[in-house]
Amino acid sequence: MSKIALFPGSFDPFTKGHENIINRALPLFDLIIIAIGRNSSKGSFFSLEKRLAMIRHLYRDESKVKVDHFDGLTVDYCKKAGAKYILRGLRTSSDFEYERAIAQTNRKMDPEIESVFLLTTPELTPINSTIVREIIRHGGDYSLFLPDGINPDDF
Image 1 (tube, helix red, strand yellow):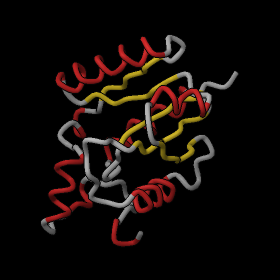
Image 2 (cartoon, helix red, strand yellow; image 1 turned 45 degrees about the horizontal axis):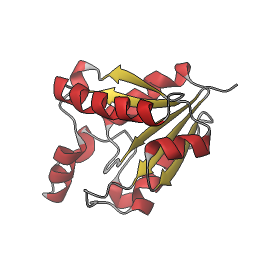
Image 3 (spheres, one colour; image 1 turned 90 degrees about the vertical axis):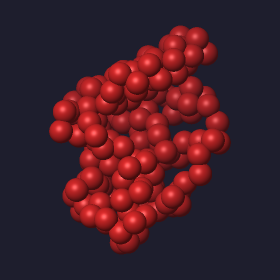
Image 4 (cartoon, helix red, strand yellow; image 1 turned 30 degrees about the vertical axis):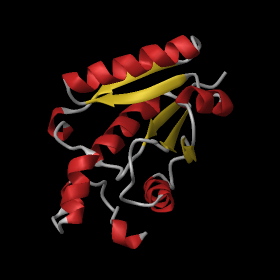
């Protein structure tokens, strides 16, 4: 049986931190599905189509990565995709508390799905999508925070 992991998020935008988690997780799984979930409590800065295009471009040569999107519960998408693992990155202790609650809830809904956490590397800890959106919104140099070769204006 293949080890399939789902890496869910809004990825608005997909940052160097996200890229680092995926790249470090590639040896652990047979397939990683990066799936943009629609968060009913968040509006998005970039369109779904633009976010999908940027991530697909980044992983265009990586056969172990699939990019998709979904509505609804993460565990329901996991079942549909055959994913038994949910991959998440942790930057801070507050991330841990938040992600722990979600992981325990997901496990209660489907005990066959395991959450796997990777710690962000120290130099990427301060990067988060909210801050990067503000940098982009106000014309700052966002290239420091987005994966190499990703320029939102190109998509």
